[in-house]
Image 1: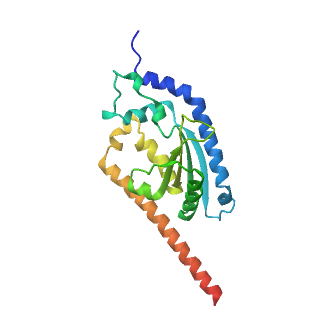
Image 2: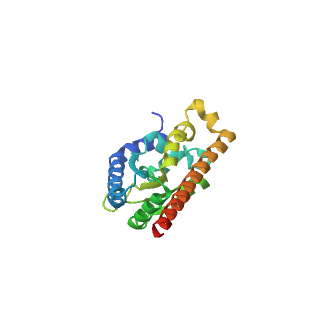
Image 3: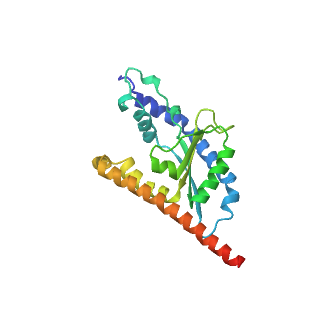
Length: 218
């Protein structure tokens, strides 16, 4: 009988953990929704907040752990030395918000509620400016599986829906496209443009409100 590979053992671990991962995702989403309820109750017509949860798939979890190893490969001589519990995002919640002021408000609320959770900034500069990411353990839910929540620009979040499937986790036919330096540059341009749009919207909105206040005083 052939020896079991690290991938075999990790897939077995994943399905052992799956009920607990789902429980963390469900509870984290419920807690987030509860904490931000005061903000979601008083949205203006143009403002938006959307909350969703997700459980990392088995293949995605194994691939994610593999990419963290030297040379992006597992050591076949030590198949038992790996665990998916090293991943911070097996269970995740994403909060999309527009405009910038709402995203800042949600960050202040959740940062104060999830005390002790570790900040995990997005790796790319534009993304660092467009969102926040935290990971930690939910007390009373799991002391093994960490949860992660992201507070992201709605514009960026919707762009990611396209970018992640096409470029971040490409199919074999799209791998050369995803690895293209030109395509990476264009992706950065999109993120910078979305950031500029939000900043200008916020600035213009503030300017309009200030003019209205001045008219009322006259």
